[in-house]
Length: 296
Image 1 (cartoon, rainbow, N blue to C red):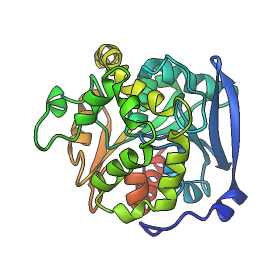
Image 2 (cartoon, helix red, strand yellow):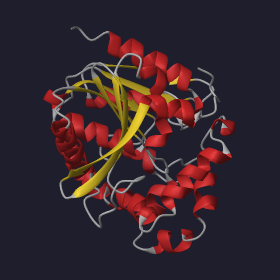
Image 3 (spheres, helix red, strand yellow):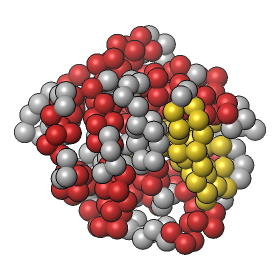
């Protein structure tokens, strides 16, 4: 798979279908295809399920792939509350049950890694193997990662956590704001095309969408409290932690080594923050190898 391969919507639609489910009082949107054991894919911000478009076709040759818009993201409902990762993880656990699934492979990126950790900690019996990609997880990642400096990669945590102001300032400027993150936090900006950004802007220009994204950061203080409690017991399932060379780098692996007892990982070279879009070929290779180690 080419790192910068374009998204062929026509070909994609032959394998994958869009669905919604009413879960815990909200409508969740997800895209699914393939056959075999289930993989749940959780995106970050400012992304949606669409962040996984380049890895889904190959994964679907081996697994049933379910790429999810978590509450507030993409085409899922945007409630006013419930953005702490324990609540969002409960949404996903309920969806897993609704779909008749027992145990899952779970993959998260950015905010999706926040939720994936909370899910694995709250429902360890449900997770066969866990993959987390390039994230600073509140209450899990060392606090130094959130300190402001010239090199800070987490400044937006503080801005987004402010009440009301971020959505006021970004209203009507969604493309400008979102594009800045893709341009400055990727090592391969061409891997996220203007057409791709069109799709993200479509979602984040919807009423309440930017506010919902910011609510994840406002709930981070609750996440810290919850995750410090979770951290008292290390995850037992195997964990793969990958960080982009120009982003969290080896810190992603170190973070998960403190949170889990069976961890492997690496630094994704020639890559920034957006691993599923910048290095889909490498990511697919790593996921297939890691999940393929699972004993029947």
